[in-house]
Length: 426
Image (cartoon, rainbow, N blue to C red; front, side):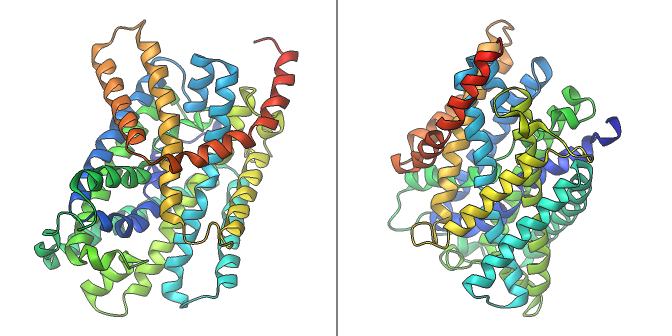
């Protein structure tokens, strides 16, 4: 199986693509409502994300290589570990519809407007195609990720470079919107911006498929997240400089719009297609990670053993298929009045889910550090914990509904796994 293992460049491509996907193309319009004060929130989100990757990096190097679910079980026991695992896996594929919708939104800059039914069919087809690629195996998916990440990085470096000469500094004059105070704008922007870093721990999930994981994973997740932070901030500032935040709020495909503003009409279709590929690359990374999370959890006896079975290509087929079916179900539910046009709310609820997962890892790290007495990493872990707790404190209660719902849905599986555990000594 060694020939199926991935190296540093493939892994960092997965880390970057998991974060630098639909978020960077959806986020500018969402951030625009906070005006210039929102840029400070973005900086705070960048700092928090890097602190969290340093916590994951330390645990990977010093203790066990894995994601939040691995640390939850090891440091807090099977029962708590199950629910963290269940929430982590569900969140990995439940966030995918946002990326799917963004992908097709940019595709429509080429095809023109689609009917709701046609758009839904295209969204489902995209999920099916990426599922097939991932069923072929992690190397095939990883190679695709490298190609799409190079395309993505190239575009996201070129756009702000080209935009520099057209930046209008007057667009930054409005500090906040008249109906939002400075502190609510900064805290709201931090929560929204952090959605762009969801998946920062993604490189830890396929640990058994990575060459020299204790060295490769820490470097990949820290450097990958730092790069995402830098390029996201530069692009957001560039877009704010060309499109006034008041106008940006109303635009669904800002990158297509900005290319039209730079070059004139006609270029938005090229940008739309490139952006479609970039969003699809991010979705591909999450399809891959969803299967790997389920497989790791299954091997750790946190999910049924069927999720750990691999096909001849080394792909955990059941985990990939169930995750993709879950994504398609949410796409179908989005056609209902209850979930229609709720992308912003869904993003914020997703952030809360991941923040709770990250708090589990940070507390596990602090527990581990009690025996290691590393002052530097203790300070880093405490700062990361403070960041996460601040996000929870400033979040409305309604944003916790998703995690409560998902936890409830996991109870039948938990009862099944309890029976399995009773047959297996801890």
